[in-house]
Amino acid sequence: MASSVVRVDLDGKPINPLTICMIGAGGFIGSHLCEKILNETQHKILALDVYNDKIKHLLEPDSLPWAGRIQFHRINIKHDSRLEGLIKMSDLTINLAAICTPADYNTRPLDTIYSNFIDALPVVMLLRFVRFRVSFSVEFVIVKYCSENGKRLIHFSTCEVYGKTIGSFLPKDSPLRQILLSSCISDMLAFVGRGVWFCVNVLYRCHQFFFYLAGVLKDPAYYVLKEDASPCIFGSIEKQRWSYACAKQLIERLVYAEGAENGLEFTIVRPFNWIGPRMDFIPGVDGPSEGVPRVLACFSNALLRREPLKLVDGGESQRTFVYIKDAIEAVLLMIENPSRANGHIFNVGNPNNEVTVRQLAEMMTAVYANVSGEPALEEPTVDVSSKEFYGEGYDDSDKRIPDMTIINRQLGWNPKTSLWDLLDSTLTYQHKTYAEAIKKVMSQPTTS
Ligand code: NAD
Ligand code: UDP
Image (tube, rainbow, N blue to C red):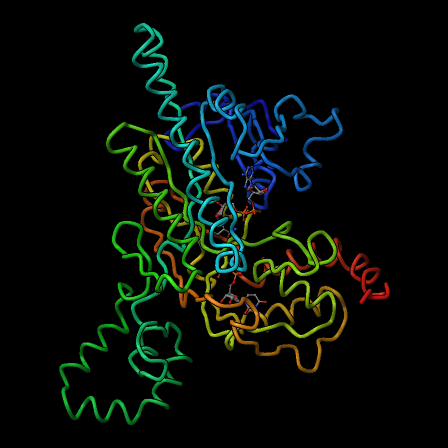
């Protein structure tokens, strides 16, 4: 519950209650952010979305202690003139709205580009308009009011703007590629075993090159992703997977340029695989039967149905997963520390929770067996090609480790929850929420 004690920022200054216009508040991240803000602060939320199922528990009944502090507006930001008024009423706008499930990037590239770039444009433009109209046309007092209470934007981008690592463009069997992609000792040992031939040759031909490789092995510059230094490396245009990353990159550039040229107060967030309860949907239960959500929900769905987990292209891609509740702490710090957050792009992830997708599948299988009390399948995974699973034009990010220097320096934030612990609480939620519903769905005769 929000206490009446005055909250202070990281510099010890009192935090005044804000009105926050949260676009996409009804989604996975939005629902957790609303919950946190209502529980722990006195800020007001204007929650905008086309859906509100994931925040219904925060909106009803009217007797809830925070009832006066959240208002839901069913708005599609593509075409709704109320958006401007709601942004104007707010001190801060947070834009979470997006199509952000990889199954859509290559199959619905136009919707993906519109959602992540074109539809986000008016939000940035309205913020510029609100600032300028007030600054140029109204007297000094209001100008002062405006600059003291500058409208801010926290824009949600993605770690996917980094794209692929340089190493992923090397031939699949190149030992150098394996070195570049390896970050754990077991991988390296495996490499040494497989790469004896390579090492002998390399040593024989050029021992300088060997020292270079040794440098690569130690140098995180080759794989850790830094907001202000790493390049954005996407696949070819035919690989429509990159439509999302490219649209997100362009809107980032626009927001950044608005900051540089027109003084827009902004913060850009790059989430690195935030996962937890309420993420996406379970196909056939609270989403379309043929829908393909992100990996957490795909694997949860398979576990609930006692079907093998599908590993796309061998499940070799690597991800770092962060618990949604840790990540939301970082966003609250950004909200309440504008002087430390404005003008920055922040990676928000957990570099300690790196696994391959195959390892994720194995861990989820083990955790789910504990949670449900049902033994795991004898063959818990099955390989599937990306073409079969996602269709033509899919491509993948091979490895994503966030550099934490900037968020650490500016906001002192660090993730806390281990992958095992976050899967344990998330799969406990999935089991409680869906196990009965899945049984019902599976007992119904299928219509052909
Ligand atoms: P989500 O799909 O659960 O939430 C997005 C919400 O935006 C949905 O409720 C949707 O209804 C709403 N929305 C979409 N278009 C809209 C429109 N035109 N008008 C009004 N509402 C609209 O996704 P999420 O995981 O909560 O992601 C939120 C943001 O974070 C997105 O911008 C996404 O690209 C970014 N992101 C998330 C992750 C992650 O790990 N979850 C990773 C990278 C980036
Ligand atoms: N993936 C998989 N099986 C699934 C769903 C996803 O192997 O059932 C893989 C996918 O190819 C990618 C990783 O899991 O390598 C993470 O996918 P997700 O959809 O969560 O999004 P991403 O991290 O790629 O944005």
